[in-house]
Length: 185
Figure: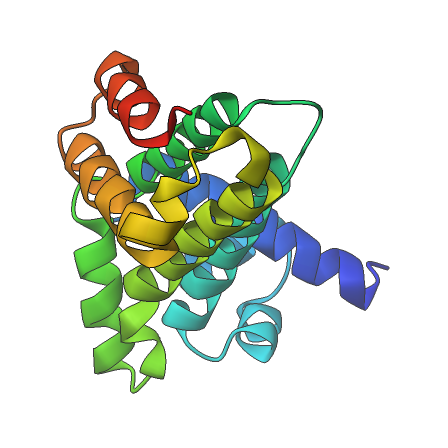
């Protein structure tokens, strides 16, 4: 007999794999139940709406990204920002093929208030930048804090990161050049 925690974990694993592989096209509760070897009722017991399950998957993936981002193992600020960028790129690439748009439609059609999830997740990445700035303050030109202010500096970086993510840029050279110009002492 499967324990309660194991059933939910299995549902989440199966649904996550299915979502990554096929997007929302094949993502239905019956398929998930079959692949997880549980009843459809068990799936609905944990996740009353499909959007609840998708949001849970996204939250787990985001937690994994944040754990990697928050790893401080002696990295410079440039290494840290490169790490944040590639974690963001990987995270959002998982949701290509209009999955984010589909999720928002799904969430709004099911009465789920999570339609703003992309913005919530971008905020989490922005907070990672703020933590990186603070943790590496000694490496940054003090004028960044006095002239630009941390919010404007982060805003500048985010705009450039978003542009690179939108174009799926895997070469970090341009961004590293901009960061060095912005942050050098």
